[in-house]
Length: 152
Figure (cartoon, rainbow, N blue to C red):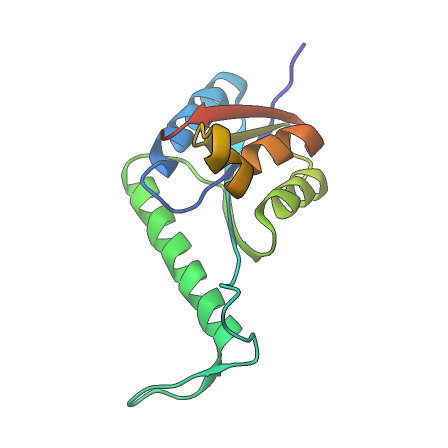
């Protein structure tokens, strides 16, 4: 029999995250499982990681630290809004890295039984150029993966 105790929901902090959480919450209710969030961010390739951010009335900080702080703040805001809408979230994680690799690594190290993640459903040239994080995760995940189409 299928046993689901821990569910991981990788999110990009877009509005598409709410339907993903809803699907995860449905599974969690049926299996008495916990739901965790994972947001993976990558720095833009055009700026050097050692660059400093400064502005009027602010102290200098490394660009990567500023990006990390920003990603964590956005995740905290997303989580607070989700909790306000009644979603039960056990933990949330914000990590730097390649999204597909980081999701697979977190799923393995965290002992997750199910991943609930979105897919944009791209085909043709856009799929070739942009790839598919969901597809890469499905191929390498150590657990079951439920993909939910979130866009066109």
